[in-house]
Length: 196
Image 1 (cartoon, rainbow, N blue to C red):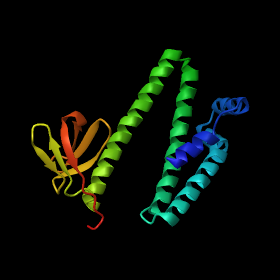
Image 2 (image 1 turned 90 degrees about the vertical axis):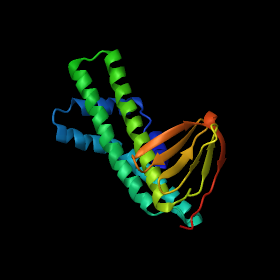
Image 3 (image 1 turned 60 degrees about the vertical axis):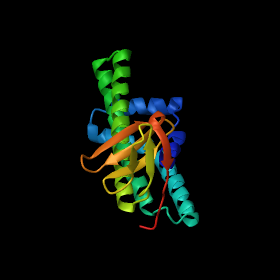
C-alpha cells in the first residue's frame, strides 16, 4: 500500500509529462516504447520504492512480526505495476489508432478496473484463508447466528475476518468463502492466538 501511495504522489502528471507520454505513444516499435516507458516512470518508481523500503525497515525494527519478505513483495508489486502501466498505455495507443469514442474509452477502463478489483478481492480472500489455516490465528473463534446456530473456526471452517457489514468464513471442504451479513450475527467470541 505504501508503494502505491508513494508512486501516485510522485507521478502527478504535469503538462510537460503529458507531452512526453504522448511522444512515447508516437514511437512505432514496441520494444523502444518499453524503454521509453521505463525512463518515463523510473523516477516515480525509485522514490516510491525508497519510501516503501524505509517504511518496512523502520516498522520491522519496532514490530518483529513484520517479515523481511514484505520487501520482496513490494518489489514484485513494483514490477506488476510497471507491467500494468505499459498495458494501460498500450490500450491508450490502440484507442488513438482506432479513434475510439469517449464512451468506449470509459467503458473499457471501467471493465479493466472492475476486473482487477474482483481478482484482488478473490486473491486477498484466499490468501487470508490460507494464513488462518497455516497460522491458526482464529482457531476457536465462535460466531453465533440469529437462528441460534454456531460457526466455530476450526480445521474445516476458518473465520477469515469481518468488515462493518459482512463476516467471512472459508470452508476447506469445497474451497469456498461464505459471506454472512452482520445483521444475521448475534455474537462473535474472538480468539486470536499466535501460539500454534
